[in-house]
Every structure is written in structure tokens, then in C-alpha cells.
Image (cartoon, rainbow, N blue to C red; front, side):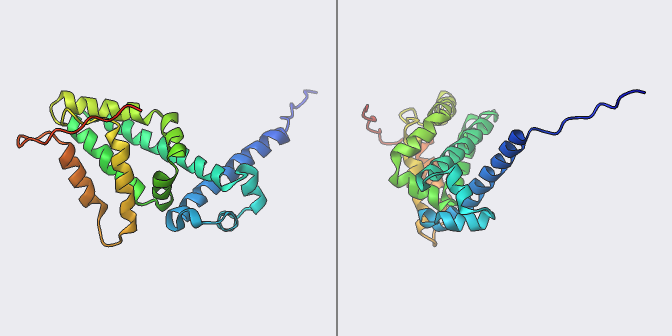
Length: 205
């Protein structure tokens, strides 16, 4: 009589790891929503309740709120890097740069916590930015625009993070549309026949 081969059950450790990954993802998504509306005032206990997990689960993945905020910052810059790569797939140099700037500004103006972090925790945001080489991606976008004569030649890729920090603050004013300020910023970066006043160079750190 032929023996039936019985498939062994999945190792318990593997199942637990998958469950832990799901819980971590759920906590991050919930924290992003909570902090997008309440900023850094959102409490870990509140995030745990909204995620449907115990507060111990939250602290197991993120021992402190700073750890949670850093994970959110990393996820946000991964999204910004994805937006930059999508923009680079567009052939038109100005259109690609403009689409990235508008999408980035919208992303940040809708996320109150990120806006607060941008203006108050520069070291954290620098680590997140460097982890995805966002400045390199912006340099490529801006360089294409400058080579095509669409972006003013004295603009520097390092201008973009500073401009984004300023645009992120628009969430404080409920009576203004961030699109207005993005338009002003883009007009300032575009190379025009009317000419611009020369920009002072960025000081090397």
C-alpha cells in the first residue's frame, strides 16, 4: 500500500513572524492616520486602540514614540523617492520636475505630523532622506530640467528640501490652498525670458 505523504505544518516561528509583520504594518498605517490629524500629540495608547492591538504590541515594535516617528519618516521618504522615480519616467524635463514638486507638496501638506517633524527634527529627516538618496533623485530631476533650459541654472537641488519645509507649514492655515504656494515656488524655479535676480550660492557645510 502506497504511503500518503503528509505535508508538515508551517513552523510556528514562521507563522509568528508573519503575524508580527502584519501587526507592525497595521500599527504604522494607523499611526500615520492618527498623526496626520493630531500630529505628534497622538498617544501610543490611542494608536493601539485604533489599530485593534494591545499597547504592548505597539511598544514591542516601537519601544518609544521617537522610534515610531522615525519609522513613519522612513516610510514617507520611501514614498517621496517613489514619486521621484515615477517623475523621472516622464520624458518632458519640466513636466517631470513639476509633477514631483506638486505631488510631494500635497503629500506633506496633508500629513500634519510629517510637517511638524520637518520643521522640528531635522536630524531625523536627514537620516530618512539619506536612506533613499532623495537628494540624488532630486539632483537628477533638476539636472535634466537645467540641461533642457527649463529650470534656472543657479537653482540647487539642496533648495528643494528647504522649499518643502516651507510648503509643509501651509497646513497651519486652513484658509489657503497649498497649490497656490507650490505655483509660486515653481515660477521662481522656472527659467523665464523675463530674467531673475541671481541667487546667492548655498554655503557649504
